[in-house]
Length: 435
Image (cartoon, rainbow, N blue to C red; front, side, top):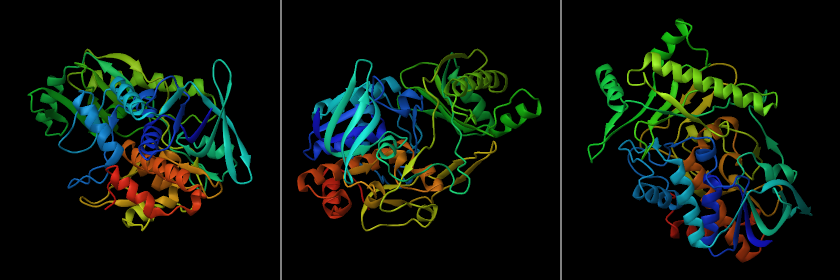
């Protein structure tokens, strides 16, 4: 197969990249290893859209994210919140909406393809080699987008990359998310209200849902009573799944196993899911009769390879609210580091009404003339990527990478010499927000 732009990876960043490139006039193939689109939200059951697109005063991310979110709301697959963040989603709906949006714009969707190598000519990628159940597949392209989450295309093409902390390569632990059913939502809400805690919400149609986090007091008590072993000092999130009565998604686990044994890592996640279920039954009213419906098909990995770009976004850039001349996306999600060594989490929030920029240079490979980066493998340091890995921000960087690749196709130039103003102009025409 041949194409103008080949997007590798069909998660939030890859979907956005393919959509943006196709809207800009490029012929696009999206290659995804799974048999469906969605990436981490779907395959890892991270069924809540993390905040980072709204700074509590205004939207700072538009474009593909806005269109996708609106479609999800209209179809009943996403619960919009007045907090403008941590919005629960239905992952089956996520699959469907993603597929429909790309099909409508003419993207050639190729699922079941696992990237296993690339061909290089001088400093340019000429094709990516994939393995499928049936054969070895080769897709040639003019420009390529690495939206694999793990930086696979950059890695296979010999790009410089980093993993974990610079000083010791310590990496954030993973989590296996899961679904619990038979939860009495109203009873949970009464308990939260009685305790004076946020997390129970009434929608305009008078239906209710939970969307809570924390529970530090209960987690601490469980450790003291030796009924909990999960190395995490709080529950990240528990939220009602849209369209599923009495069903909640749970993010509460911490998997440190790093010996390369994927099966052992996964089964540790399953063990933690069952332990978590027993925690909720014992300590949280409304969960007494809850049942484990499903664990995610894959362990959620927070960060992996980060490919070297023309510029590396740093922790200081985020905390200083850096504004770049070549801005192609914005965000306001906090630095959110799950400790590689302990049950603690380091969180540094961005002030209300403020945001930081993502530079075009950080999504352009420094070492390949036709490779762009999207999502959690963009050029950022260990602390910065802990903020930039969230779904809306991944969509924003992906949308920009797709447009950058499409414009490069039109000019035929080295992607590293791309005029950022042309990318910004096209982003704005597609509904992007840059200031």
